[in-house]
Amino acid sequence: ERLPEGDAAIRATDSDAALARLSAVRKGYLTDPYIAPFVSRPHVQQPRPPLINIGTYVRSEALDELVNGWLALCETEGTKCQIVSMGAGSDTRFWRIATGDRKDLLAKYIELDFAEITTKKAMAIRKNRDLSAALGKPEDVSLANGGTALHSPVYHLLAADLRKPPAESLAPLLTSPNDPLLSPSLPTLLLFECVLVYMSPEASQNILQWFTDYFAGGSGVLGCIVYEMFALEDSFGKVMVNNLKARNVTLPGAQPYPTFDTLPNRFLQHGWDIARALTLKDIRRGYIEPAELERISRLEMLDEIEELELVLAHYAITWGCKLPANSAELKAQW
Ligand code: SAM
Image (cartoon, rainbow, N blue to C red; front, side, top):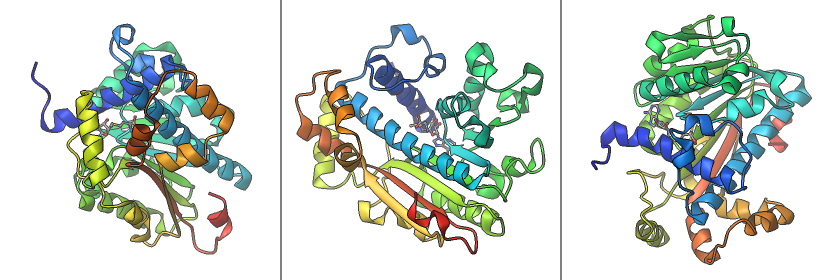
């Protein structure tokens, strides 16, 4: 069997992420009723190794915590917000928020990915009653651009190659279908979950600069969460790659951001006010309730905590925000 190459290999990482999530859900690490419809032939899929399940769990919990924290801040401020997810793949976050307590806070939830992925996702949504129902009345939901885009009152799915200049790739955020799709005056959260690694540092910087400029005159806070692997070239990184290879887990051909210490520069170099980063290792050790750690430790046997920590130390979540002029409120809270 020939493995996909180039962009097809990058797109294939979406199925890997979705399968990892399905596996973590089935093993009891996570709850997510929306992932199975996005996986092809979910009933025949094998579970992933415990190490992958735990990694998926820690990453997912940490991102949920940050996104929920963001929504809670908007709730306190009494404002709706927008979320834009870049390289969203088969992510189910929209449905989890849209069926939760804070659904009324969402003004817009926009997902971008390659056209092949958005077409597949749009079809999966149309085919599944639960996924469709969360979008609103059927007459308010429409496919566009030859089936590569989907629009509904809150949720929008758009095709884009994020390596292209943002003036081109992000143009749909300004034009369709109500003008502009993305309001510069609402608090807006950008999500890059395991996607920046597939583009050059320049392309990532251009995207962040585009959003920074777009919101510069607006009244809303601009927030961002990035999840990525980093520093795979160090000695621990090499051990990790070999360990994974020995288990037939291959890492996507990636060019990671240099080191942990430089991660906040992603935001600071654009003049943002807050930037923080934590590795998944730190998050597992310091931010997950002991009772919860105890619960997941009973789900599967994992003999090598050391190996787990070695792997988790190479993944980080970086988050930050740019405050509108004359606002210092959010600084201490997120
Ligand atoms: N964010 C999802 C998650 O965490 O479950 C999916 C992550 S998956 C590892 C990476 C996703 O980024 C894939 O869906 C891929 O198609 C998308 N992607 C990578 N490079 C991209 C680009 N240049 N433009 C648009 N999407 C891209």
